[in-house]
Length: 208
Image 1 (cartoon, rainbow, N blue to C red):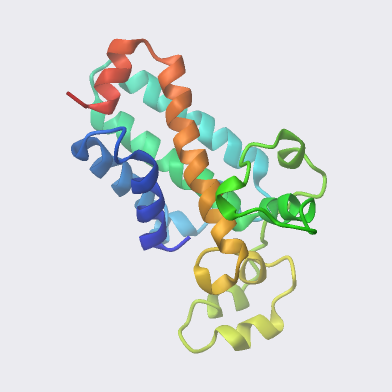
Image 2 (cartoon, rainbow, N blue to C red):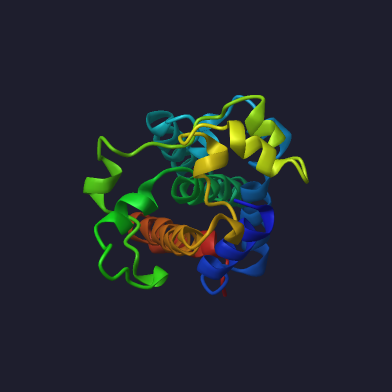
């Protein structure tokens, strides 16, 4: 998703749950995943190229980093690990067809976007689930202002350019991807709350 959208989603999910100082670290690490160094050779950061196993392993690795950093009083490392984790889980909904699979079951009367369930195990494990393939050079051309429509003529239906829900310009499914990503970000925070002793969780939130 676009930088401003990752910022908005993360802030919406977390601003009442963490201190401004903690959220600043989370946001910085989240956005860094979209730097050029995070775009090349890191499908696991974004759930690209059907890298579901790798991306889920990456999410778990960031959880482990966070859980190791907190007892060591390295709060910036813990917050940064959570920021990287949130970027990846947010991209799952924008870069895969999860939203389409969910909506396929509601064709008669699609519910409003806030009602999407981001954690349907049957959809997450569905053999029909796939994510956008990076198809060079046209997926690179796609991001050049003024050349998007040209790139789309050459990109296959399962390409990142055709599948992504990274901005409102991608159509009505974007609102569902955004809502699912916000819910999933809040869920990941709640997972930590349930798994951490209260004193460590208090350090993580940095509130009060």
